[in-house]
Picture 1 (cartoon, rainbow, N blue to C red):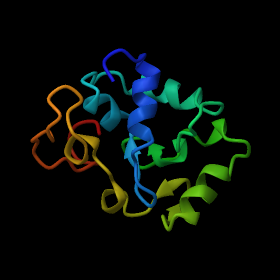
Picture 2 (cartoon, rainbow, N blue to C red):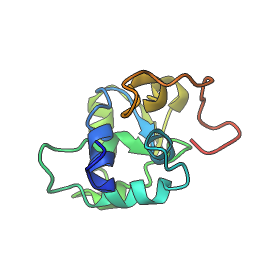
Picture 3 (cartoon, rainbow, N blue to C red):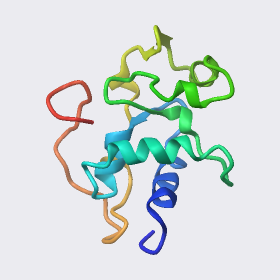
Picture 4 (tube, helix red, strand yellow):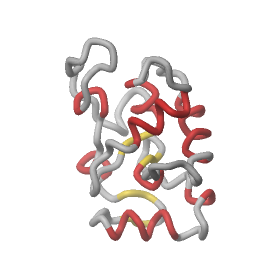
Length: 131
């Protein structure tokens, strides 16, 4: 992952999000070691529609589980429809029980450099901090 562009690194992580799970822009940024770059992760997601292999951008949300990227899909309801098809309940453009579905790449994936899972304290979205 070292020689890839930032956007390609974001896409590599996003492709690993399991069906039926979601993560946040900030969680991907933290995993990549660029914790203050959540907005850049959003820009990457915005530009991934023509990438191959496909990127499951519908699984990347803001830190509160809001579908803030929904306007970048073919229709304003497509992101919600895709999440619901994976068994994730969405109400008023927000994932219900976001913490239950939250997938944290810091604890689920190996560090790209050391090839070991990173040891972190439990990260729960919607608490102090930005995840």
